[in-house]
Amino acid sequence: MIDLSIVIPAFNEEARLGPTLERLAAHLTATGRRWEILVVDDGSTDGTAALCERLGPRLNLRLLVQRSNRGKGHAVRVGMLAAQGAVRVMYDADGATPPDQLPRLLAALDTGAAVAIGSRYLDGAVPTSQPAWRRLWSRLVNLVVRRTIVPGVRDTHCGCKAFTAAAAEDLFRRATVDGWAFDLEVLGLAHRLGHRVVEVAVAWQDDARSRVRPLRDLGRAVGDTVAVLRSLAAV
Image (cartoon, rainbow, N blue to C red):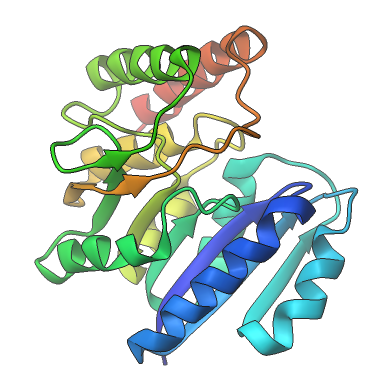
């Protein structure tokens, strides 16, 4: 039995992933829990897979390689369904949410939540400074989706979310969106299926190497959101 699985989707993350894995493993070892780290390489063309193979034996890491780039949603889905932990955490490769914030999410699950999502916008959150365009983009997206898909959730896209095994199995077996809006689909499914979702204030550190580009990504975000609305209509 494994207590905790950390699922990390990775596409060309050779430069950022190593330090994240080292910090995670150090934190998890200190907890005394039985844990595993799963990295899902989403068709990387750099040395991401080689890095994981090198670190794997020392950091209790399993590598799942996808031969083609399918999208973050697909990678997270593969990892969540392959994980063995009683709790399964989605965690971004840049480690923007420090590992010492994980106990906050786990505590929410201990009180009966099925899903605990990190939030940069609740009172008590400790975000570092972001470029103005990133703050505006994030707030605009969240305003729209709160009114259409996941009412009451202030931060749908923080890259740190925890699920009980039962919730992860139920939600990710139903999920179909591979791209940007997969968070919306999973949280929308949780809302409609009665899985209790709790938002938890966390510290968060902006990474200047973020791949979000508002003008480039706007059309994709709209298309993905429409796809989510269609998929949820059938639930």
